[in-house]
Length: 343
Image (cartoon, rainbow, N blue to C red):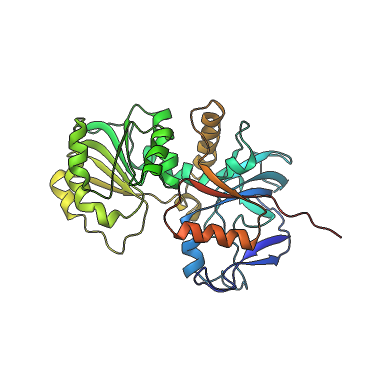
């Protein structure tokens, strides 16, 4: 099968940063399903792993990719959720070969049924960011359980990025929260408003005065998707006493002592945790993806795909990685389709 891989970690401007390779088609066992990949999307984690992580022990190359939509090609002997021919979408597992290949093995418990109202490319934009958004809102911040103080509102820092773009519509569809998103350019401000944000503030300026000017009170919930270390003092000032704070990025250090006087709880979200540790509730990811698909099909959540490249190959994937590393992308970059092979 065709795949895109790398053999040594490094910067994207290397000639062999990502290369087209041929690999054996895998065979499903246990609860795995084999998916014929139709479309993939690219996340910051792809660039992070490519830049710094060597291939798995004993392997010459590593295949990345943590977003895909495709068709079930085969199922393992213990698989019960899906049958051959089912159309699916999923984010996969950090410690297994990824979706940048014609065929991928994935545990059926972390797979959802593809939304029927959108195509494979649009569906491939959703899984990783939707899982991250859902787990942050409902498993980490527990937004359905309002703290004793604070406005029933959530501030989403980095609202136009992939995760922010998923969190805004899910919060609007599944909660009664007032959604405040941050954006620093006219283009991204328009994007987050279109996604459903009630209010937009500029994260390139002090945020606490902007929150106060809205007249809503201090938000009970804050979700930081990027540059958390830059905004930490501001967050400590603007969040409500006994509020809940979540983040997903990787600051070199994080001094949260300013949260103490307000008894703010801090929650780190990593959507790979359940599959990494095979937690008893790992199947929640498949169920929540099915719930997201239902929200898409009734028009409450939409794809966050903003650009589609075709076909799926090393050259286009390199371009997607370059754009992701620019940190100026809006929504998600998707790759769709494989070039026809000729005898």
